[in-house]
Length: 193
Image (cartoon, rainbow, N blue to C red; front, side, top):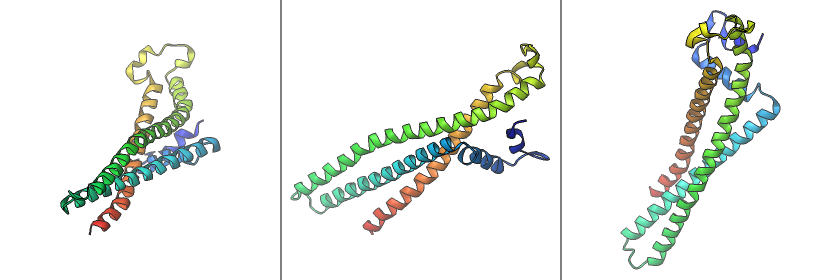
């Protein structure tokens, strides 16, 4: 009797989507083993740190672009040294952004894979066994009479968990990235005005 069936269904039926989502989050972020939790929080902290770095580099990039345009509009033909220095800072920010993006996507992929593997192991342990027993497949039958609904339950669960993890991390981290950009670009806009 696995806890998964009891956690994700209410007495009268399935949980509302928001509560079910929160329980799935809790299953990974709070109810997992200490090692998994520490590793996941370390990965999340690193992803957020890289997001902060990306936001700062993007703000520097924008600031340098604005300075270049201001220098050129102010009769920058005589200030070639300032234009070249601004161009150099702009190029450095642009070059820094590429490896930072690559690091970000690798870290995010690692976090998603860890979460996906943990939830898949959790659900596959209880649901597939229960499903096979309920269809009589434990007695040695091949399950051919089940059709598409009974076969490959483990793959369906793994696919559903993968979709949940991808959408959850994307939505959460994109909202966090939007807040970071808002913070950094508010500073850029404050300088302009």
